[in-house]
Amino acid sequence: MRRKLFAANWKMNLGPAQARELIRAVRAQLDPQSGSLLKDREVMIAPPAILIPAVQQELAGASIALGAQNMYFEEQGAFTGEISAAMLKAYGVTHVILGHSERRHIFGEDDVLINKKVKAALRHELTPVLCVGETLAQRDGGETTRILTTQLLAGLGELDAAQVSKVVIAYEPVWAIGTGKNATPDQAQREHGALRGTLVERAGRDVAHSVRILYGGSVTAENVDSLMSKPDIDGALVGGASLKADSFVRIVRALTV
Ligand code: PGA
Image (cartoon, rainbow, N blue to C red):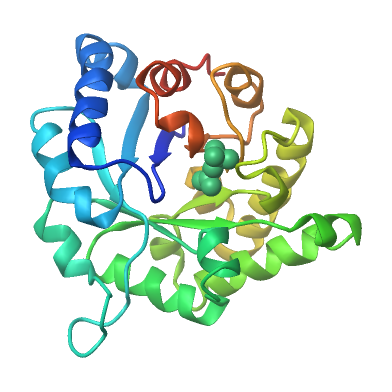
């Protein structure tokens, strides 16, 4: 039984006061339910790096995990502007989103770099949320399966099966991110099923069936239930709709199978 994971990716939004206010509003709704609702699901919030200390304070005592949106793979040194796994851990971060399509397409991150980050995260016992996804041109060109398989296998690189079992995958079709056009539940299920099939070949049945595959791309309070009705969709990575307490909490409360 895979525990669903509902993850917020705030991207480059909010200041410290707004961040604190949003966490308080989310907690006001979720804390009373942490004994029941959060028994079968996990919640994670990934603010911009500079807001991590403020969010850590606001999350004290909550059943909500703290995530980062990115990190660098080196331990320390002359890497201006970068943040290491150890730095994140010092502020209570437990998850890190890696290979998000905005990192790949705006900042030129490739699979080799992303794999180094995945390995560094595991070395520091951070849970990597490895994002994969095809562009519209790739989908229209019939390349979706090839792109997803390549990104998944290259992102995992040489990890052994035990390490693969610690990774969370997020399928985020690039054409669905921030566009209001989500993949239909059937479209998403098809790709999630294919990704799980690749994981079976790569790491064996048991591991493949324990790894969570989140869907991301215009997830909303309105469409989350139908997405979560699919057997291989194990949660959501939510951008825009995570910036409002009501919509994020409704997503966390999704009906699940
Ligand atoms: P969106 O972003 O929900 O705003 O489409 C999702 C993501 O990029 O993680």
